[in-house]
Length: 145
Image (cartoon, rainbow, N blue to C red; front, side, top):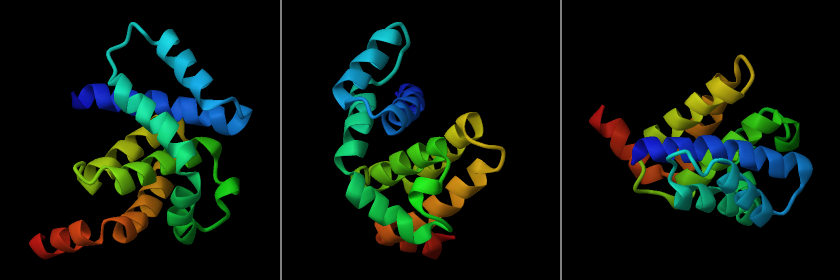
């Protein structure tokens, strides 16, 4: 299941990137990706939730990321911006997924799709955002280490 979720995240990065750049409507992008990748084993429900959820929660996601950036969100590389938004969405909406898993998945996506040092930037921003979005989990983690 987690492998299918990782694949869903990977496709979601591409779909959200397309939405950010082309401004197509989300249902069309979802249908396009699910049609093009029908033969791949992905968690389609999770893919759909990410691709619909990020644009639907954009203001709150961007507000949770912006304080941790060294520049405006719009000037962040569009691929890394998509990864950051997915990471923030998962941190905010999926407390059942440990924050370290969310961050690690985002780092791996940034290594595949982002710039050469993009994964370090994504790691730093999401680590700071996790302190804000998951304070109880972060505090518990610090006490146990």
